[in-house]
Image 1 (cartoon, rainbow, N blue to C red):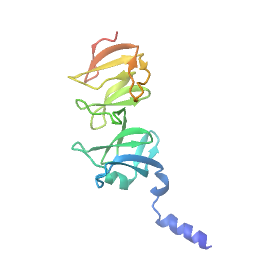
Image 2 (image 1 turned 60 degrees about the vertical axis):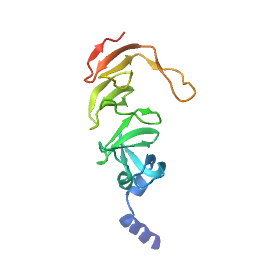
Image 3 (image 1 turned 180 degrees about the horizontal axis):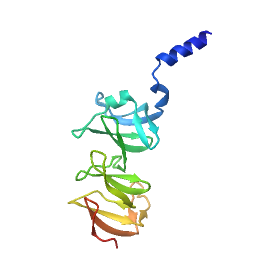
Image 4 (image 1 turned 120 degrees about the vertical axis):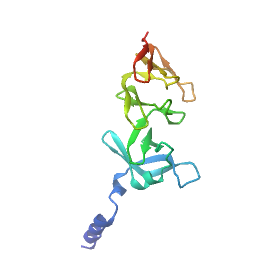
Length: 175
């Protein structure tokens, strides 16, 4: 009887998220001068998206664009203060940089480009794409990841390469 009452009280008063946020995160908290740290029970997966526990969302250090980054479940994400997340490529051990306002993300095994509002600007039709520079990005179809150089870096090999502009229009055909 006492156990049943205790269980009922816990169900009524214990935070519901305590059991549901089962993923650890790695991020730099705004209230911690120590830099990057790992935090257990920070996030959970909801279908194809990820959600941070409210107390972790509040601790993130947001930039001037209202974005923070965190590693969750082995992947890199940009996160808005609203809790919206965008899974992006990992680059230099962090979230892919926004170059000329766009970042890269894997979508169904292809590279897509997103703006800082998490709008998809260029659809995922290429096997790889470089960051934008001077309004252009190199893209390829049929290329694949080559061997690692031992430091975790690798290059794309083979396939047909071309160049697109920031709207996704091909400015140099694939060849």
